[in-house]
Length: 452
Ligand code: PXG
Ligand code: PLP
Image (cartoon, rainbow, N blue to C red; front, side, top):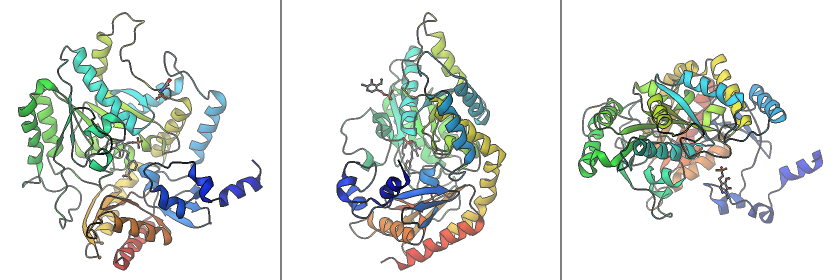
């Protein structure tokens, strides 16, 4: 395509041309009437097609903490695409996936050391749930099939993920899913304004985890395969576990032979100021899911990391060596170009001490976002690492409207923030400066105050 064509494309927003793309999780009618087209990105900024520079207040969709346009990642992707653009995912291998698996394991909690690659967080969720059921069946406990999620949980959009997920808007159109129960959410009452984790005492504290005992009483542990939770819930608006809550879930799962799965698609690889939420909160699951930041968002890649005993169980039951042990996988599992992006991204997280940087920025970010207390419509602020959720008091009958209005007003001011449900979400890049965080949050405060 010559420059003229590309310039032409850059300017095209006519309705007929845009009709062909049914956009995901997007108000298609609104977008196509008022397009928000991005043209390029560098560092912590997007350039919109009209030339406007916009600060990336959510690191893309929680995935580009290292900032955009990273030369090292782009070069690794280009080199790999030219060398081995695709390699059959089944029954053949290529060195990069083994290299990346080792690099991932080095960053996982001790004992989680077997990496199954997927193409996204949703695929990771469904892979982990199938792995859990198959594990128990392989061990001769075929009755252990029930899956336990949590209200307000998000585990992507595939059938397993929406069944254990607890954001009802993502499930209600789709009919019968997989049998699942849900723990209560851990979101404190509006007006709590806790900094980081809520205290462990009281009815919204660690005792919330004991609800798992009630579910076990109902179904019996002999029918339950796994519990899946996000260390902190991202999509629902940054909902922290109370002190001691995850420890309690771990104890109950261990005592009752139930696998504990952490969905770390958002909390993995730096966002929580540690390599994993597991590390940040000091609790180790049996299975840990990742995606997003592992490639800095530059290529689609996810993974499920299992403890060795799970892998060994499948191997021991696998029959003759020429037979496969786990009938599961995707055409794009361990895609060589995605693995190249993953290796380059993990190298950059190391060479830039990005996780350390998140830890250093987090107190500044916490002070900034909690400065929003008192702004108009701000009902609660929650934060951890470089993530924050702000609950917006609803317009009567239209709880989702004000967040939308606020996000659009922020865009006009040059800041991209995410809105979802009754929340505004922030997850600035790890490379943000303190001044950038301050201007993001002060623009948000002004916008709240100016919103009817
Ligand atoms: N698990 C968790 C915990 C997630 O946050 C997924 C699974 C699904 O990943 P994929 O790659 O299939 O989208 C996610 C994704 C938001 C937002 O603004 C959050 C996600 C995706 C898009 C937007 O909260 N989380
Ligand atoms: N549908 C059909 C008809 C297929 O042939 C395949 C893969 O071979 C799939 C779905 C699954 O695609 P993927 O492996 O990319 O998830």
